[in-house]
Length: 387
Image (cartoon, rainbow, N blue to C red; front, side, top):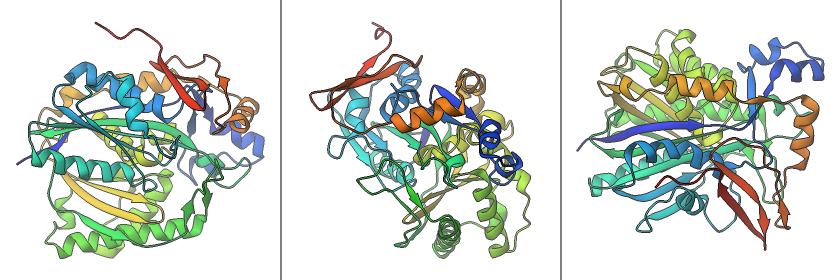
């Protein structure tokens, strides 16, 4: 049975912070960000946005295009969860008007969660090909102000449908796996920002990539020359380059950093989107590469702590009919620039408190986080649901 990604769409935050502005504020050469990190800007959610509003906004075009028939599972991957018990999947399910005859679950393992959701979805569809699974990966990457990690923040969401006989990518059965207990990145329950050991994070990422590759090879996997395009998780795009250079040396392949450039296009502008990052790279590749018919993609997902998985998939002929390059470019261009001072104020005001409040109406997206009432987060659609 052929199972894979049938369609996909993206969303991001209302604001954007240009890293030239942050460099000027911090008194550093902008090349430190543009070249050293491989980043140009990062998205900043408005006060009435969060992972739920972005995730639902990413999923909405899929529902409008394909309807709800057959969707009996919603999997929401995030490491920016807004509740310790109730899943973001349940809230998104309600905002999207999905049938009650569905399971809705949130998954967490740092940035790997989106791939965990994809793998689970593949199994669900293989069990019953009549079903389709809606996967949402949505995150807001937040670090302490004035920290080394600050310029690698970001926000974004990718939603995709997993189905039998997919129109976009058929995921091949074999994958490579790697897990190790490493404290390279984590966010304790009493913090709204993550803690990170940058040097350890890079080495743990590389270890997971090479370990996943070796595991795939041991399971009769493909040769390096059989891979036409590579996609990596991108906390910042330069990290993916470092890891790919290490893989090239590991297998004796020629390293050409330009081969990864197309997949970096959206991530350079949104910043880190954690669970959505590798799928945002996939969206960029599908939107911007005209020569993917029948090509094999390698997709490496990494989640700190750590878990890595290497998947491969074949792009289906006709994928260009589902591309949204113009829409994504418009989405990114439409973000409202935010000054460093206003960004810092918004960063400091971000709260996970359950105290009652009403959020100002800022976002122009289809969904809003309106505030907290009786300890519960409240959401609304900004325009009526079509009949």
